[in-house]
Image 1 (cartoon, rainbow, N blue to C red):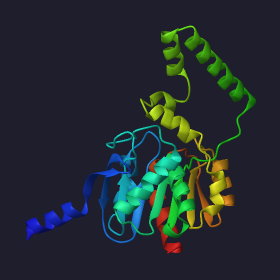
Image 2 (cartoon, rainbow, N blue to C red; image 1 turned 30 degrees about the horizontal axis):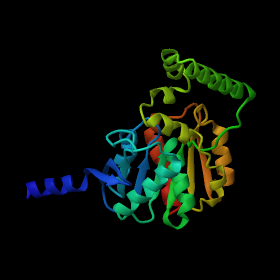
Image 3 (cartoon, rainbow, N blue to C red; image 1 turned 45 degrees about the vertical axis):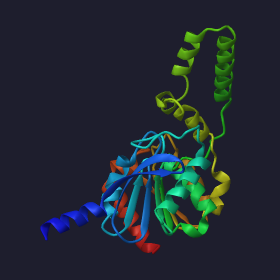
Length: 266
C-alpha cells in the first residue's frame, strides 16, 4: 500500500520533455482541477515560478514551462518573435488538452499571454500579469541618435573589414539581456523587445489582475496603469517599494493577492 501511494505521487508531479511547435520543450505539471499555466520572464526559467506552482498544485492542474531558448528547453530553430511564442503556447495547450486556462505571466511571459488571450478570448478563464512587458515607450531623441551612431559604426567596421573591432562593438552594445543572449536568442531578443501589444489590450476580454512594483524600471508602473485602462476587465495591485521582481521577492503576499482575485472572479 505504501509503494502504491508513492507511485501515485510521482505520477501526479511530472517533469516532461516533448516536441511542442517543433521544439524539444521541458515543463513540469502537477495536480488536478482547473488548468493553470505559468509563463516565466526573459532570461529566466520555470524555477522562477516555483512558489506559485507549489501554492496552487493542490487545487489546480498546474503547468510551468521552460520557453524555447530557456531552462532545459531547446532553442527555437530560427529567430522567433512574440507571435511565434504565442503559436508555441497554442500548441502546448492543444498537446496537453488544456481547457480555458488561467494564465500567470511575468515580464516577457506576459507578452505571450496577452497575445494568446487577444487571439483566443473564449479560451482564457483569467490572467494575472506581473511586471508585464509589451508596451513600447516612445524613443527619445537621445536614444535615436545613439542607435544611429551604433549603426553607422557597425557599417563602417564591416566595410573596412575590422572584424575584431566589430565583434567588440557588438559585444558591448545593447542591454544586459541582449549581451547575455547567445546564438539565435540574440536576434530573437531583438524581435521580442520590438513587439508592441498595445493595440491588442482592448481585445483581452477575461478578468485580469495586474501586479506591479512601483520601483520597476524594466517595465515602469505607467505601463501597468495603461494596461489597466485599456483592458476591459482589469485591476492593478501595486507593491510599494518593490521592483520588477515584486512577485518573487514577496511570494507569499503575491499568492494571497492572487487567491483573492481567483475567488472573486470565480
